[in-house]
Amino acid sequence: MSTADARWVLSQAVAKLPAGRVLFIDADGVAADIVRERPDIRPVTFSTRRQNWLEECPADLAGVCMGWNPAKSLTRMLLRMLAEQVGAGTKLWLFGAGRSGISSAPSLLNEHWMKVEKVAYGGHAELWHAVLRESAPAHGLAAWEERSLTHVAGQDVVLVSLPGVFSHGEVDDGTRLLLEHTPLLPKGARVHDFGCGCGIIAAWLKLRQPDLVVSASDVSALAYAATKTTLRENKISGVTVHVAAGLAAIPGPLDVIVSNPPFHSGQNTDYSITEELFSSAAKKLAPRGALYIVGNRFLPYRAPMEKCIGPTQVLADTRSFWVLKATRG
Image 1: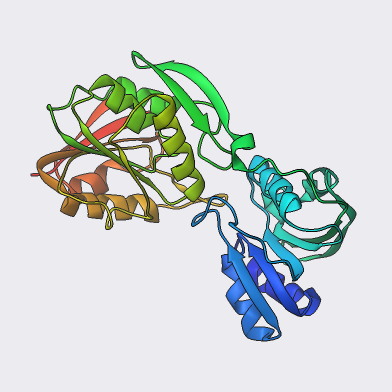
Image 2 (image 1 turned 180 degrees about the horizontal axis):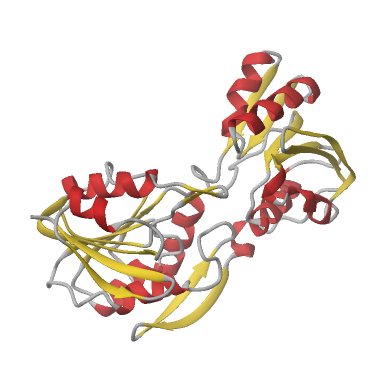
């Protein structure tokens, strides 16, 4: 959300949320500010970046404040799993930017919630309110796993994905191109899959070359869970998976980093993740180590890779994507 959107949501939430214990779901951007303005609110926070789901939902909730996710499948999952945890009559406030698709909130809320109404809109954002009709039977996170068998770059891989994880339910064209142009790596090389999503790159690398020492990381706890399950379904062991926002926490040095890095923050292009990747890779890679990435063709990756890491070559170039390799000097 933009700063203006967040300010508007803050003003509405401060006025409308009840006193007492409030569960904030994927609302990190506004929760602290709300509580600062409303010291009578006792917050319980949950973020899909840090946890797969709540271990235990407090029994004395006064209400729930939840951020809308543009990935509707993730919002649907969170609403359903919330309905499994809380009691009938629980009040929900759902907020999001107007351009995020939140106008379709009624179609998701009506599955388990009643008295659905848009209680405020303005500042390019919306706030919805609903009440849980009745508790839903407990199915947990495993019920949302989507399995598929795919053939990519010479390997059959079983993928297990979850809502909100990048390229949910499929292998995107960019990742396919990247793997098709990733050469055989030196035996025993230390390889890291950055932004692992459902774990397709890590699994593919280990299936093709079992001798590789592979690790993987993603900022999302849901991606962590999906990657761990993908590895298990492919009978792959020995791959270390991290929930991490960058490379700082990843043990090094590394011989190779392979990535289809994210370049969006909400609906906006955001280069901060790749800028951090390039600068961190320069420190984390061993001498002559290499970074392989794929990106949309319009993304200006080559110059910063050259500057931060070293000589950079184009391994593939299509109308939509290019695959680049930067080698540390």
